[in-house]
Image (cartoon, rainbow, N blue to C red; front, side):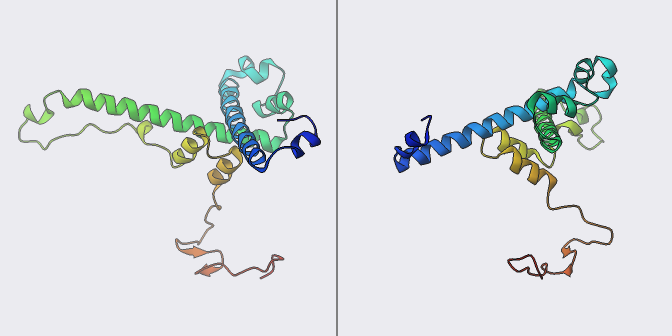
Length: 189
């Protein structure tokens, strides 16, 4: 691309748009790698490892502290990377368990049904292992992994719009039934 503002000013409009798209794609890919790396760092720094954990061996109390030191990131960014990394890991684990359950079902499909041994009993389907049920955030993890969602947006989606408070009911907002009051451009009601 270029190394000065004059180099960028010389680009055509199409080159500017293509360059910006390339940068955005690269940033999303690097952010996703950072989330994977944070998840790995967290697993290797688990509390049950004690002083043998990665963070502890390097003199850090928590994996977040280690990540902040290595990356120069803020505490908030470190927490976000760990949360999104966990989301990716949970999605992968559930997808792997689902594939294994599907493979096991294929093997069982070739065996005689259990009800042939006891024809008076209803047919029995083997249960689906809990690990094979994808977490609610699996689509977020897949979108992030496939590169069309940023870590920032994945974290926002993971957090959601908030949790219902005591006394809240489905279909109601904090302001009662129906839509929330409109706000002006200045945030006033």
